Amino acid sequence: MYDALKKELETYERRTPRSREAHRKAIERVPLGVASNYRYYPPYPLFVKDGRGGHFHDVDGNEYIDHNLCYGALMAGHCHPAVMKAVQHRLEVGTLFGMPHGLELELAEEICARFPVDMVRFGNSGSEVTMHSLRLARAVTGRSKIVKMEGGYHGGHDAISVSVKPKSTEFGDPENPKPVVSSAGVLKGTTDATLVAPFNNLSAMERLFAEYPNEIGAVILEPIMMNIAFCMPDEGYLQGLRRITAHHGALLIFDEVKTGAKLARGGACEYFGVKPDIVTLGKSIGGGFSLAAFAASRKIMDVIATQKMFHAGTYNTNPVVMAAGLATFRGVLTPASYAHIDKIAAKLLTGYRKIVASAGLTAYVDGAGANGALMLYPSRVRNYRDWYHLDEDLWTHYWFAMANRGVIAQPYWWDEQWTLSVAHTEADIDRHLEVFAEIAPALAQAQQERQLVPVHSV
Ligand SMILES: Cc1ncc(COP(=O)(O)O)c(C=O)c1O
Image 1 (cartoon, rainbow, N blue to C red):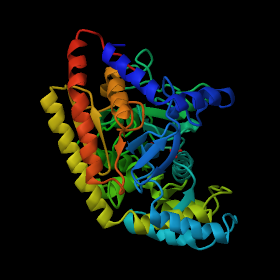
Image 2: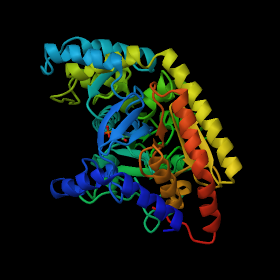
Image 3: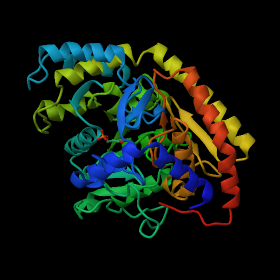
Image 4: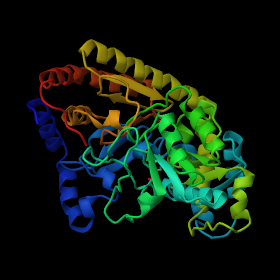
């Protein structure tokens, strides 16, 4: 670890003693002291006190501009008034029935008006709906294998807990990546059914279909890979996948848990003009509540309608969350909001690019819709293998230096990206850029000094 980074870590510890103490206590009862492994980072994570709009306070009273926004689940910002009002009303008339109440139809109509789908089933988390989307694809095609992208994350269930962040010692040939189980406890046999492909590589996908004729039921992917920071599909790649899957009788699943609300009104389907067979939604569609959905054509959903495929859940469409979702679709994910996000996103991207250039940092900046990231790479990342080699210390320096100056530039870990909310203002973006301009020369200097030092990798 180099001196400038050490100094930022010392400053972090000096500013956040209550977080350190809260974490010290939490690890006694909660593994890692956090409720999701992603939330832990050394030396300890910030513990939060409250949030409003585009800002939050930690337990030491420090205020931050928030571009973590719960890993991209809060394009609405904290406590959006329309969402709060809808939820408060529901809190007074019953929170849970396990019976239909009509809001499911209203929200399904909103989704079908934006995405190329006819029918919707709801759940509570992205993991849940990607899990059911795979069952749906298997039920419809009668095939058991699925293909996911190397480096792709779709939640915590077994079927997709393969090659999420595989190590170079185990991941094999880049053209034909070896499926690697990503957690202790995942069924070893998972890799028989879950195949792995490199993103942005149509010939590798063709080869998999040739190797397993009539066995692959679905290809699941994020249209923009946002679990390796920010990785755009090459021109024509998604259209190519559409063609290949259709040709081989497999379904194409767009996991739009991240892109669904934040990329455009109709998500990646609209943005790229591609119609997948199944769409999964989560995160920002709930306006801060745990709402998720999977959606498809009437023909596909018929396996559920005819009771051939089972899908259930006690908390599905609980009225509080549905009210939050409806308020989000109608009051937050509006044309005016997308125009605002586009404006501040352009300002942030342009500002970052200018600062990167003037500081002489070897990096680029990419983004679309409400998401984007500083990519500390010499050239565009096209897949997991490109993303894998990063100067982790330099990225850590960036994150803590920004946090110490009141900007959570993105969730911690370099596989994430920033989210902009409707509550962020131009003044927030100005401040974000001011802070980045302040720290960029030190990043560039550290980068130049470390050129001879081998980079780390995850
Ligand atoms: C693309 C994608 N799909 C699915 C999930 C899982 O969603 P959840 O954390 O709500 O289970 C995530 C979570 O980050 C995600 O990024």
